[in-house]
Image (cartoon, rainbow, N blue to C red; front, top):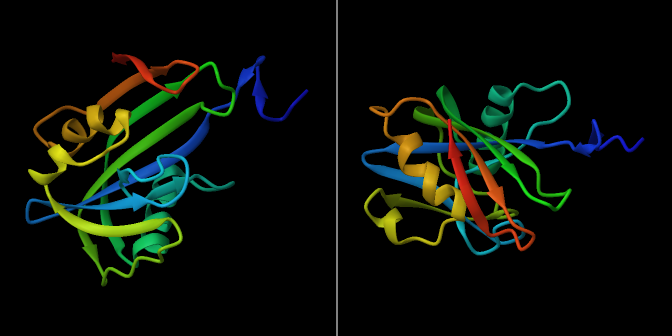
Length: 162
């Protein structure tokens, strides 16, 4: 049996995203490789063995930006499914307003920039991020949980909010 299979179905890839908020601005990265090539995303990455999603979020933020999260808020959980076995994701979404250090993007993943929250409305974000980003960063909203369904072309066809 393939180690990537679980009960005959593809096993999801566990990953994190961290939205750093400061003075009505958010830190985003323009990806220079797939997935989401050319789109603006939050720092983050795949959960490694023995690591919790929280640990991964802290590590990825520091590795990609040089910033150290002093307090992360777990604000959302999104499951992404598609007919493609390599496009099964579980996204742990975090927000921080409490971090230290100087932004030093490593450029391996892409270029970082601070954007006003208003400016993000016109940015090229991944389809999924367009839906969950405003809800996750709004602390007056409840914890966000949803299942996103993609077709074979990886176009978002359904959002089932839970």
